[in-house]
Length: 145
Image 1 (tube, rainbow, N blue to C red):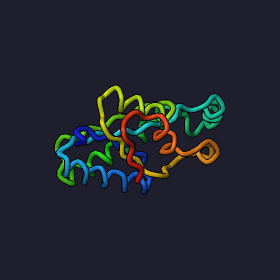
Image 2: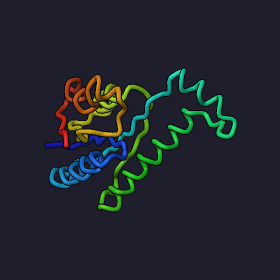
Image 3: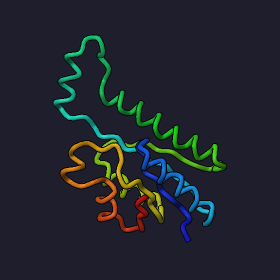
Image 4: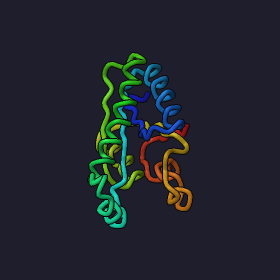
């Protein structure tokens, strides 16, 4: 049935539920599990704000990448702790919904399991949630948890 399951993961409670559901489905179908964390590239305004903090001179992209990597590794460890030996975790930067759909297509995933609400910004409330956009853009089935 489902041989390759993609779980977009942002560390939110609904992402945890989606990951648990994906693990259950993977056990039932013998499918593989892949975790994807997507972080947003910061805007020019955010970049300019980071330059006025002399006590915290870190590059926002580097900070966001480090956090996204921690989030993805946490999810991978959770899957391993629950018996999944061959689980992969990836981190991407850019538009979240489009990255998820493109990643699923490029890597041959046949199911996306995603949380219904994540850690999105106010933009998500105005323009629609990531899960809603993924269901509209994806060519493969999407399970919204």
